[in-house]
Length: 478
Image (cartoon, rainbow, N blue to C red; front, side):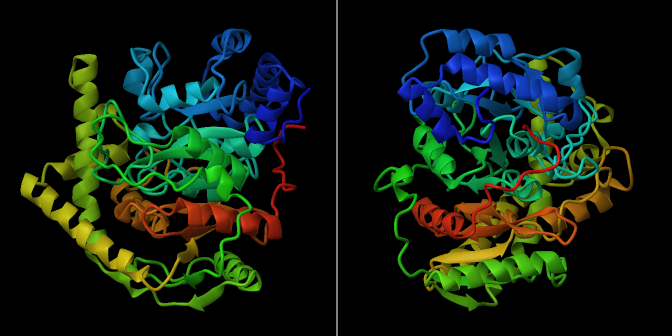
């Protein structure tokens, strides 16, 4: 059987060289999902026979031909396949999409073979993957801990070795936060680097971005090459990379100007001591690699306008999600059919006027300009990804506790990730730290708008200096 810890790049090379057939890779991935998923609940829709049929056929001759893959059950949909978005309403009617998103088409053209769809919280709206519709995804490092959200199923699948790479999306940290909690690599690309078409130009205001979770920097880079570029009519078009991102892996990043801080961006002080240690260790590592590293206050992050804008923006987008799905299925979705957290957001939206929403977006934009200005003197910012190690399941589960207090708690946990959804800058979480009780801790690196190349050069340099490839969670493929 194929080594489950080969990354997607290595698996693709096996196919190109004739050492493995696509069907062998797909069968091996299916066997791993069947073995591990009963404990992890990462994959909620199996596509095994469809995947086998694809692997037997004439796959596109893309860079990842024959490599098994998973797609998050949110935003990115496939024709004929279930698409439930964490909603019990959609599960009850087994809603299926009648079309592919353009990103799905790009993954398919790259040669990936989807073997299933991964677990996500209801409407991808919170930072843990515990939807009522499908139950909790479990962290392979500790089954009683959260995978994070909203790409929690994807992160658990990659961390446990089911697949080497899985699609995710990030509206406030939903790629990076699960990457940190599950000990994998998670890049949120620059706004506009990947397309949300044909359904959306932007989503969740300007905050939604799509990419993947992986175990290696070269997979993150190579898949971005396969998926990047605007779609026809996209509202954001940015300059294409100077050269393929795969060529940035191992390239000399030069002597970068790096600033770091550990203080939370919401004014509540320092994060968990193990998180502080992980960031300081990462900064020291960067300094040892020849970079100019400074402990910096980064006061732009303390501007209160982002926190003030968030309730109006996200209440409005969740209410619109509910309204849109009602239009799609042909009936109104009652507020009582939602989990309490989303009920609260919909109720909040009733007090948000159109002008209040626009004012919030304006405030977010003004805040983002201040953070972007900091990068005129620096090349990279280092922050924690999440202010604490993986937390216990049940803390944010639907129906438990005061929903408003849960909103505040979840907001505190995206204090370091949300800023780059607002600015649109690229940011990556690398699995560099471990807590004192053996749980993964990610460290986040952000670069100026459009500079994924800088992050990939630095991340690959860090990966070579402090490799994480030998780390395996207790629940994993063997």
